[in-house]
Amino acid sequence: MKKILIISGIVLGACCLLVLLLVGGYALYLQLSYNRIPDYVHLSTENNPGNVLEPETTYTAVTYNIGFGAYEPTYTFFMDTGRMKDGTPTQGQYSRAFSEERVIANTQTSRSILQSLDSDFYLLQEVDTDSTRSYHVNQVNMMIEEFTGYGSVYTNAFHSPYLFYPILSPHGLVNSGLLTLSRYHIEENLRRSLPIDNGFITRLTDLDRCFTISYVPVQNDKMLSLITLHLTAYDEGGTIRKQQLDMLLDVMEEEYAKGNYVIAGGDFNHDIASTIELFPSQQEIPDWVYALSPEDLRSHFSFVIPDNYDEVPSCRGADIPYEEGVTYTVTVDGFIVSDNVEATSQVISTDFISSDHQPVKLSFRLLD
Image (cartoon, rainbow, N blue to C red; front, side, top):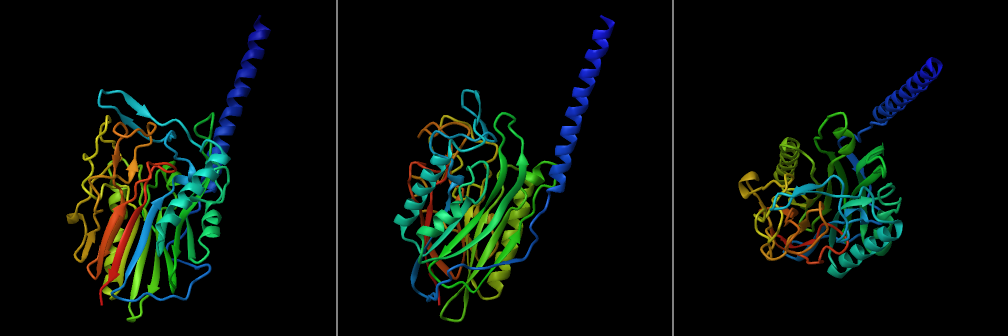
């Protein structure tokens, strides 16, 4: 009996040591894999068109977060939590898309929606190139292949080492980013790195938040500074999001001071149209929703509130499957423009068929 206990103790000790070595080795792997893309990176434009913008002419731009091809209406995401109005807590279930086939189908649907909008510029977020969560489908290539008459600018906005969480279905490796498509010539692109949370884990899961500035020439010798952005979502207290917004606004002021037209579009992860309590829902307002108002912007800039802001939201909660009137919805996608740009916008209803976001289309004129 004593011998059995000794052997059992040795086996148990060996197992514990093995677990410690594995955990320690994985922690070391995460830290050695940490490699943030630096600030002020110049990006190339592939297939750059020769067309030049004209002042006092109407153009269009669309922003759309395609949700890495996963967020069809029944999809929920494991990091999203919430609460029903009766007090029942809710949490998303999945860390990956349902299948490679569904990623391809959802990306094709999002692509078709964009094509139907026939826009001059597209500002896209959560476009994966090589991620476990999207079965390594290259969504950037899928987009570029169909928009043959457009120049394209891609930058990695989220890359992480292999994350072994959740244990039974790890989120895995992520390479995802921002894609800008343009019918008009782009003279230069600049990638700016946003502030992030430097916590041990959060700095890995929010590693490369950024925005891109594409400089589009105008015939009056001015420049359109077109910004594609995606601000952070998981930020308790909103500290990092405030720092990101402040940096974005600082850069927009600098561009305006140069005499440029400025348009910034994307997923702000803030309520930008006073819709935080607007749409019918059986859920409480989630903790991740923060409201922005015109007072949060600087002089010479304004949000372009969608004409149908009180009818169609741009984003749904992903802690439960989407059901109109039940799932929480809000508008966090859209545009900020400088006062030398005249603009209107509209949220495009898609019934959240292939993403947890819906496109927002901007019509704008550059004032001479």
